[in-house]
Amino acid sequence: MNQLTEQSIGCPYCGETIDVLIDSSDAEQQYIEDCQVCCKPINFLVSESINGDVTVNVFSEDEGF
Figure 1: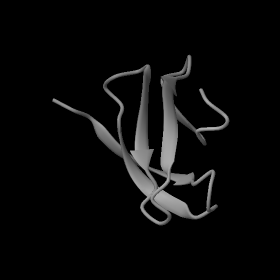
Figure 2: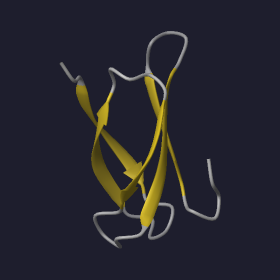
Figure 3: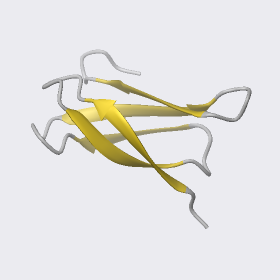
Figure 4: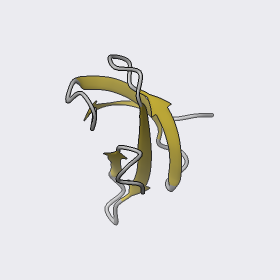
C-alpha cells in the first residue's frame, strides 16, 4: 500500500508554493512533475533522513539533481 504524504514545495521557476503528494514508502526516488501554476518541469529528489523523516528537494532542469 502506498503511503502518500502531502508536502508543500516552492517551484524553482515561478516561486509559487504548491502542494504535492509524495510516496513515502519508497525512500529514495527521483522523478519529474510539472508545476501546477507555470507548467514547467520540476525535478524532485525524495530521500529519507536517519531519523525516518522524508525530505523533498526540488530543482529546475538547469540545476539538475
